[in-house]
Length: 182
Image (cartoon, rainbow, N blue to C red):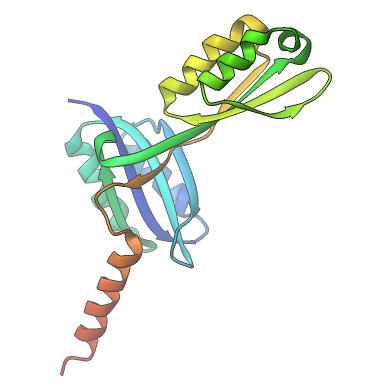
């Protein structure tokens, strides 16, 4: 049964790796719902956070295929219950439509949004949360003339983990012991 998984891939920062990862998905005809790349907590190591709707068996195979890539150090996959995650969203609305409406401020507060840019012709609001939360604010702002909306990719941290840094230190320690064993 398909469900949403977040795949976290730790890699060396090499040109062309994103393309190789994308090819793994396209060969299997799997749609990427969200993709975020960023530096990790370990210098020189990057992190891909990829969201897919797929079976656990297929996600397990994907993770194994990622780890076969030379520049990939480790790949994990998790369900939503095993991670803490957020997305950021920006909303552009006409300033004159919301300026006179006192209830807009209350609605924005209820949704944890804040104004980040206020111009004569438009105002941009920002919020973070789960997809349902950012989608709900779209519905709230549409009656005021929502001009534009954009949402970031998911950022996620695994709940039950010491972090990749600790795993990497353990790996380096075992590798060092192995290399120095007569």
